[in-house]
Length: 555
Image 1 (cartoon, one colour):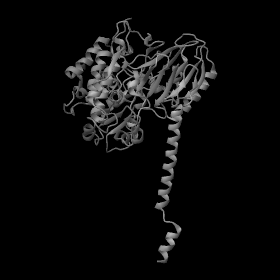
Image 2 (spheres, helix red, strand yellow):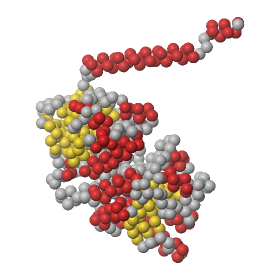
Image 3 (spheres, helix red, strand yellow):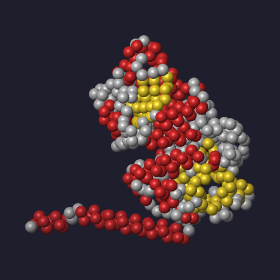
Image 4 (cartoon, helix red, strand yellow):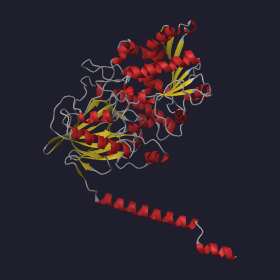
């Protein structure tokens, strides 16, 4: 039997962690082991006891390097995990960078614990190809398929033997937004879909209730909007452009889009202006200490190829857009990391600030971390440039309430010349153009499309990693798509929301709690009742009672 228990991301979008136990071989393993992020209450879960014994786990199958999917791996090691973490080479290198940074910032674990993680890198094997089966134990195996979320990201298919044949379950990880028909963001090629004969699909639902506007899925419109904002700021207002960024993936996307502006739009802008005074050199600088190291990983792996000669990750349309071969793009990234400077065109340069170097206030365009503007180099740029209406801040990512970026978002507009605060830098919101999460329509295609392979087997969908509202909206959408009965769609047998109960994947039935688990549950419920009673008594003691008031009045 293979049984499954969802540990994290059951009621939200962080802390992804799923526990599986193959009883025939007594193999316990996890898919992801992520950190909880958000409010203090949510982050408190990072220090709560794991429901499993770390020392008994044999593997962790890692989907990608975002901290909400990998962030508790060092704590797992601290508590006795000595097994292997499976991942792609890019995911391994990016995860190590993210965890070392988290160790320095959060103090939740040490750099030594990060370095103790034992890895098994899938694509180091010369025979690697997406979808190839890898044995985990007797009667159970796995395969990795490409996701378009970030570099190295994957969905994971797990197969196992049962008494009446084989079964499979696929974990989506975070579903990217690149498709064969429209890979509109610059870096990643399209993602793959679960195998046609999959029995279960665990799908994230971050944007399960959202539909992305068509304009935000159009690469030409994105590049045109960015060009409009930059040209207006530099050549009309005479200011500078600041783009706050997340170090992992977003900084590298923005680097490519700004490079495109320099190679394609800048010459056209200068020609249209017809003013020799605007022939001065233009410099765009990337200032993100973690982003510098991340870009080094992208330089090594973005343009890598599988043994069949196809790009593992690279969106080939980027080569056409930039009029550069893949090896030229790789060389450009290497030059930025190693030498800090790349000539993008006549009179235009890309530069990259190395860690511990001072801010580059002379640059015309700065891409700076951190993405929500509360820390990192972006703070100094905002301090110097934020009060000058000639300058523009372009927001390209999520901004949480209470953050500096959240404050900026409150006065952001969609296009230039609509500033809500004329005495401050203009703020433009371009975040809808850059989101790397699949929206509802893309999630539906992920679930229903089989890449042309026919199969009569119906799948059970387990919705996870989302708010209750997004899960509900995705469930409704899946039901409606299923009722359409499109000819080439996968059949969906059942839709469930993931919860913390054990599920027997051989039969699809919920496993009843053991006597020990039930006793613990009853004890916890009793403690909750006692706590509620104590809280009620405290409230009553804090209020003046009627007879007390009367006595005081008489005296």
